[in-house]
Image 1 (cartoon, rainbow, N blue to C red):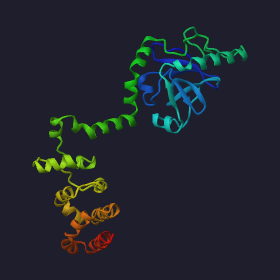
Image 2: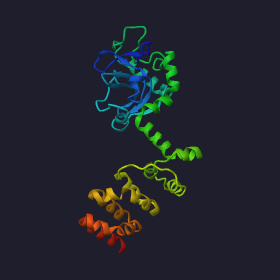
Image 3: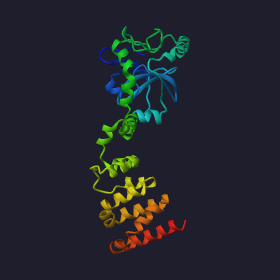
Image 4: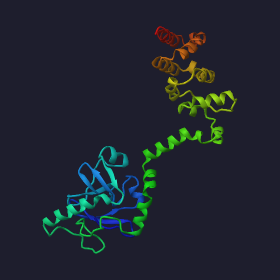
Length: 292
């Protein structure tokens, strides 16, 4: 593999025998989560990351004559889950033994192998003990900070970290707890105890205008007093929209929440007037729960 130059490009021979320039800049490689010089494990064996060309991340697999890529490796998610690419080392320390083995094998082949005729670039003969690494100062500095930047560029991992922080942020102190007033956020993330404290203390809470389906998923662990608190705020919508009420009843039935079913049953007087068919269905479901 060639070394990095000042323009963040490398020159390398492909399996087809062509010599191409590959983009190794952080901006181009961050989409894929792997960078020039990384030692990786792939379905075709171990190899080094070359760079980006034609919206594809190219690899140079040990023992292969030239660089190649996978058509279905369109981003980091695809490379990890479809192509099964696994990072082994940022600077290829683990690749020393494989490099020496590849070097010996290359010597046995035709000495007329294609080589890049340029002193600043090297084909992957591994004749230089360090040519598989990024010897350019800028590239070395990039590797030193890649741990953080790799996390940031991997959107799935980054979103998971942010969501996890968002879920547990209120535990960091009283000031943060005080600032949380979104009742629906607390319900969705399972902070029923925090919401109960807010309700008890008379906090000025905010509520979504619509009763969304994601709230139904929280009925499994939602305390009855929280549901009783929410019901008056969404009662008109629940009574008006058949699908919403039917969805609530189905979830209550699924989780066996007899206490919530009893409370809903207490509202049947108005339901028979507005939606008798829904009320009948709900009544049957609630009776079934009571018979358990």
